[in-house]
Length: 284
Image (cartoon, rainbow, N blue to C red; front, side, top):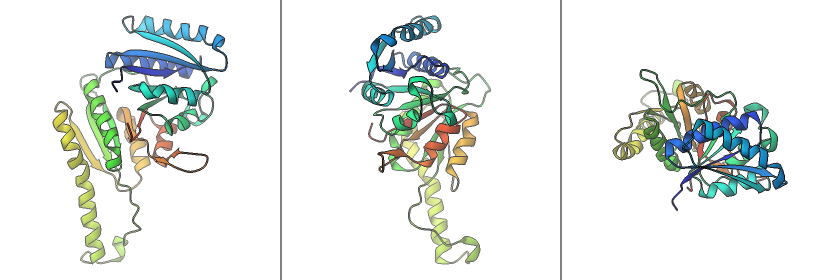
């Protein structure tokens, strides 16, 4: 399926306006259509808000094609369905305070756990998008990598860096699920445990370079800085968002009650990131 538009959810709130502006910029960058969607209990409520949104976009991007759409249902249900055919879905959030208006509550988290394509979450305190980095300014697309499951997120990050004309900063935080290694300060450097640990660390450090080298061949114009983070991936990524235009991570979904939910890195970034967050589902 060829995806030709960017979808944004609006509800008349100020944070939704910030998401609308960002979504319009993304549509212009992709040379594609913008679809403005309002999830409402009654279609009659949507007219003024959708008209206002279309008018705002027309002032900022007069050549951009805009389609407005009112859909009855919950924001999560409506935007999850709309994401099936979207190159990117954009929503706004207040971070710790949740989202406002019709998007009130933990919609960004619940939507991220169900969305079918890339989801951009924009907080009201995120700076306005400048499109590309000014000469001499250190700005990048930040990519958080855990393993092979993030292959689609990596592709998206390369494409985003190419669209923006900026470099790609990849932070690799391996997912250790195989027990606790020997504590290095308690054993000899020549012990089998220390040697295995050193071998694992060398292998992990090579993962981003090996995995990303093939994408660099596909996107030769994108400069890449790849590093491995062995502890505190949430904190490392959070600090790195201070210098990033956008951060891209895989949507690692865990099945449980009351349904799929995201891991701690996604939660941290959605609540506290200094730039917009794009979550890419592994199945897209």
